[in-house]
Structure formats: C-alpha cells, structure tokens
Length: 574
Length: 55
Image (cartoon, one colour):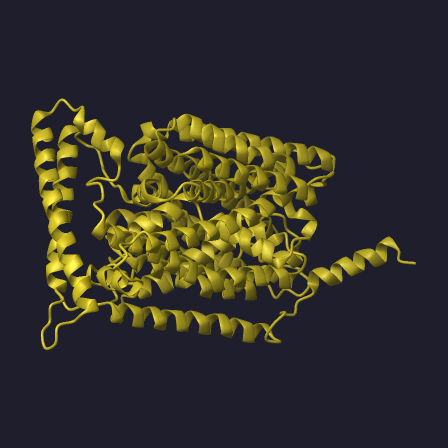
C-alpha cells in the first residue's frame, strides 16, 4: 500500500468510529445500551442488518468464488427475501410486544427457564466460535497479501471495534454499521468499475460477459434438484430460507438489530429492506468476480494466488516437489499464452464477424481453461507433497491480489477500508449480542437479579471486553487450529436448524410445552449430527432437518409431558 | 400539560404504530417483495441461458 492508500484507510476508519461514538454520546440506561432506547429508524437498522451479515470473508471470498466456481453461489441467497417476509409477519410483532431484550428471553415467557438457558448456551457456543473466526479469517488474508503481522492485524481490528462497541453499545454499533455498509457499497461499485476499466481497450463489457459465459462463470441459476449439490435453485429457496429464518429470527446478533426499532413498522421495514437489496447486491459482487476472471484472461494471473504458500514451497526441502512445481509453472505459462491468443481472436471475431463462417471457438476456450486448471492442480499437488497434510484453497486471495496489483493509488486504500468495515461491522454486532445474552439471559436472570441499572450497563461493557479478548485469543491461535477452522464453520451450521425449530414451536404451536421444546431441541441436534456424519447431504439442508425434527418431536412430547403455558402478549396469538 | 403517563402512552402508541409506508397494507408489501424475488430469479435464469454455450 502506498501513502495515499494509508491516508484513505485511516481517514475512513477514524470517520466511522468517530461518527459512531458521536451518535451514542451521553449517559445510557441498560435499555439504551442494548436497544438504543428503541429509537432507531428503519434505514439505519436495515443497513446495520446487512453490514452484520456481510463479513470480510463474504466480501473478498464471494468475488473469488465467482472467479473459480462461477456465479451459482447467488442462489444461496434466494431464500432470504422469503424469510424476511415470514419474520416480518410473525416474529417481529411478537418480540416487540413481549418487550424482550434478547430472543431467548422470549423463550422463557413462552416455555420455561431451561429452554431459555439451552437456547442461550447454544447461541454463545456457536457465535463465540464465529466471532473468533470473523476476526481471524481477514487477518490471515491481509497478512498474506500485505505481509502484515497476523497478530498485529488481529489486535488493531479488535482494538478499533472495542473502542466504539464498549462505550457506545448498540447505538454506536448500529451507526458505525451504517457507515460501514455504505463504504462496502462504494467499495463494490469501485471494484466493478475498475475491473471494467482495466480490461484491454478493445474488450467491451459485452465481450467480457461473453468470455466469462463461455468459461461457465455466469451460471447464476441451476434448476436441477440434487440434495448433494450445494447451490441450486431448490437448495437456495428451501435450505437458504431455513438458514435465513434461523439466522435472522433466532440469532441475537441479528435480532438485536431490529429490536432497536422505533416501532414494529420500522423493524419490519428494516428486514424487508434487506430482503429487497440482498440478492441484487450479491449478484453484483459475484458479477465483479466474473469480471475479474475475464480480466485475467488477458493479463497473466499468478499460478497460485496465495503467494506465501508458494514461497514456502520455494524454501521446501523436497527437491521432487520443487521440480514438479516448476513443471507445473511452465505448463501454466504456456497454457495462459495460448489462452490469451485465443481470447484476443475471439474478441476480434465478435467485433468483425466474417460472413458465412463461425470463427468463435467456445470449445477451444474451455479446453484452454482446463489446461490452466490442470497446471494449477499440479502446482497444488507439488505444494502438498512438500507439506504433507496441508490443504490449499486460494479463493480468498484472488480478489485482493487483483486489487493490490492493478488498482490505482487511493482506490486500494478505499477497498481495504471496505474490507475492514465489513470485518468490523460483523465483529462489533456479534460482540454486542454475545455480551447482551451473557448478561441478560445468564447473569441478570440467574446470578444477580436486583442490581442498579448502571450495574448492568457496566456488566455488559465488561462482557463485551471479555468476548473481545476471547475472540482475539481464538484468532491468535487460529493458525495452529488448522483444519479445525473448517470444523468451526461446520459447528455453526449444525445448530441453527434446531434453534429455529424451538422458535417455530413457540410461535406456531400453542400446545407446545417447555419440556417438549427442550426434548425436541436435543432430538433435532442428534438428527442433524447424524445427517452430517452418515449422509452426503449438503449442509444447507441441515437447517431443514433440524427444524423439522424439533417441531415433530417437540409436538409429540408436548402432548404427554410438561405444563402448557398461556402467553399473555398484547396483540399476540400464542 | 402532558404528564409522564401521557408521554408513556405516546411512546407505546409510537412503538405499536404498524402501517407500512408504501402499498397501504403489509400483505401487499410482502407480495411485492416476493414478486420482486420471482422477477430476479427469472431475469437471472434468462441471463444464465443467454451466456450458456453448448459443451
């Protein structure tokens, strides 16, 4: 990064944090600290909801995913608008009228204290692992790209987040999220336009789309139904809807965003705003990745985007691996030169098609892409020979390599600021939610019920610092966890469906009892674990399995065990 | 003169204020969101088809 990039990055961060602190100044009660005194307008909540969901890895990984796997990932978001409609119509008025601070508090009103504890502990485990990863993952990528110290990056990011999340509470988190989301929008638009600008002068947007299409990168919709296929229309609509229902309806890091609303209408609109914008935004981010692919058809990309891994091989003690790596490099260079010649011919032919003949050669381009992929695969095999057991995936490095090598001065700083913004918005909301649940669902409920308001504010601030330190420690040792990181990701997807099932019982099944919900939650978890261990079903479907099992088992058990509780919520139906 | 109780009632009314700013009813707004999603999926499908070339 050059001086101007640093200036842009620093100014962006200072303005964001300063604005958040300014908007949250003054003495705060616990209600203000955790729910912003219910004064937030819909647009601020809507942007905050989007910013919380968009982590740094979402931003840099999604573009990389389009580069390597095409745009089919957009289908993952198809269920989200449906979930937003369902939640607006059902959950939002209930939560507001029940005057809860956390989603799990509602479960005690509806069922009993054991269901509340079980759900809050599930959330704390799952989100606790998630916040460490949200801090660790961008630090790794930024350290590889810029040579920054991983630990310094973690410390700086955690320090900045705590500097506004602790004193300002949810108000500071929401107002910084607003700025951060606007910065993310700006970063995405800048990246897209710059990718187009950097194409050779003879290549139009239409040519870039055509070449990406021939290479199979514009596969946005796949109508085939296959449970093992991670991204198709059906897994996106059904599995994605269940995942979004769980995330936005049962995860405190999102529920807390829309509980800050001035009114039920404001909270509803904030969710619907997300439902309206999310799919086009993700499509646009993926399209940017596809344009990066087209750019690298004309400009030679690195054979492996993770340069640190490649450098490790150069220093490796295995001469055999080095020879294989060099052979792969030669193949790659030749394949790229041939592919470049071919795409230039194809573009020229598109502009001046010779009459009566078909000179476009899509099959030739696909063969050339395969030759490049083969060379990359051989290079990865050489890497793995040098470091047995190591896994290699450079999806998260593609976009940043493109930005840092080719973007003009100033814009690099802007995009890096957008990546920092994406990371910080997710981390701050998660720390805020973890602290709320720790204090309101555990400390205040079971340890100290009758303290002063200021004591709970202090306890929540302390809990925020605790979770921040915890996330930092997790991130510090993240490198040693290796493949455990994948397991952590997996753990997240294992809990959501069952948690959703408990809330479905709470809202939709008046005969459900606390004991029924509790036993249903355990049954749902067992079913999800068995599905993940014994079948090849894609993880998006775990949410459906977990939810359905909880509802069925919970309903049956409720008929025989537990006391039915009448919930007295003004305007509520349960 | 407004008392704290009046203020509390105003706040309660504001919190429960529940009409959408557009489309008059929530059901219409929900239908618009779902319709927009259907339109996007259809356009993305056309986009996929337009740039899909036989293997």
